[in-house]
Length: 189
Image (tube, rainbow, N blue to C red; front, top):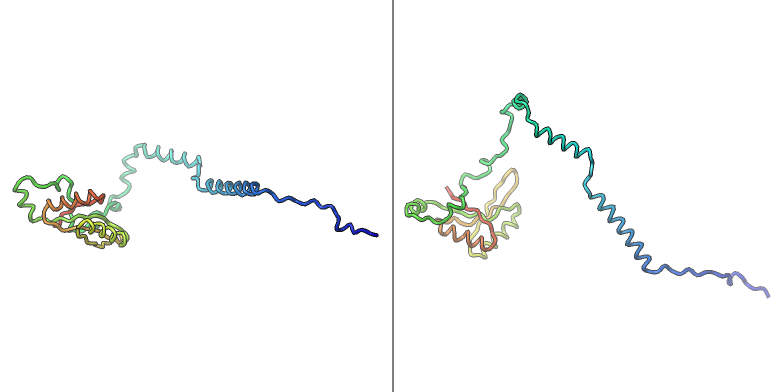
């Protein structure tokens, strides 16, 4: 009787790879990709760049002849700051030493006509300004938000006041400082 050898072929059964080998393979591939990303994020270390910086620094350190500085007419130079166009006319910053309460009666009489405000923040986002206003309100101070436009950007200034005397101004500043809120005192004209 003939035998069917097809079904009796000695096959070697393959054992599956253990799980830790798959884990090590995946881990090594992940680390390699992370290393490539790390190398991609590194700044270039071009030697010619550092040499160029050194030569530019040497040029700056050398005094330039007077003729070279006079070649540019002064009328073409634009002012670097537009300080006076940015600040509104109604604000004057008060130095910290002038905020202290007056000691003599003469300054008290001249101080009565002055009014002060405290700026407790300036934010680009209206939501941030509203949050600061709410924080100040929880301290018992009434704040307002003024919107200004500086270099075509909208800013929202949070202000407390006005107050009519330095004593109240000092009390408000102390309260804000105790609660980690920086305030800037300004005198209204």
